[in-house]
Each structure stands twice: as C-alpha cells, then as structure tokens.
Length: 150
Image: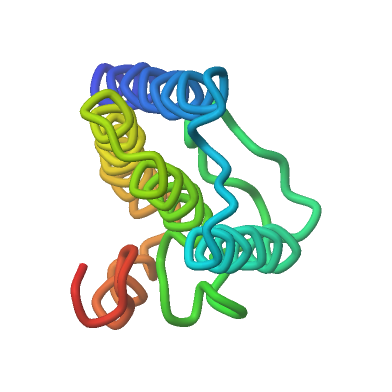
C-alpha cells in the first residue's frame, strides 16, 4: 500500500502542476477572462462556488499531494451535492475562458485543466477512502463534479 500511496501522491502533484500550468497559459495571452456576459456569469459562479467550498472546508490546509486532512469528512455546504466543488469551479472557470476566446490552443488548455482535475479526483478519492471509511457511502450519494451527470 505504501508504493500505491507514493504513486498516488506523485500523480496528484502532476495534476496540480498541470491545472496551474493550464490556467497560467490561458491567462498569459489574456485568454482566460472575457467581457462576454455569459462568460462573466459562469466565471463569477465558479468563483462563488470555489469560495463557498473553501469556507466550508474551514481552516484545513491545501495539500499539493491531495493528502486527506485531519478533522473528519466534510459533507456540508457545496460538498453536500458535489464531491469536488473546488475542482469543479476551476474547470468551469477555465472552460468559460476557453469558450469565450475559442481557439484550439484554448480548448486544449482547458482540456488539460479538466484532465488534470480528473486525475487528482481519482487519486484523492482513493486516499480519502483509505483514511475515512465513511467516504464510500458519501461518494455513493453525491456527484463528483456535475450533479446528475458525473
């Protein structure tokens, strides 16, 4: 199990770096933010979701390696409906920017952000389930990112 844990932590670091690289690469040429009202609305909603999730998560620290934190499983706030609201918010933000400034490069970068978030989700789920056995029951009744879809 130690080797699996090390591999999951390494993969989650790759996912974190990939998400950051995708967002930074979208931002650098000014292809992340838009003046289009729909993109602004989606990105504002994503920002609110991210803040709500972060506040609900409390004083727990962010771990680049997706390590489960002390203090029990968080199942309130947006976590009541979505298992990974912070990753959802990041992907929505990136996706809205890509659509608003459509190009193949922007689409690929947004796909990179989504793919890396999915990788982190799967790594995180294995580690959290090992730490908190009640996670399996929680995961069975919540959606990972998009209610009624995934």
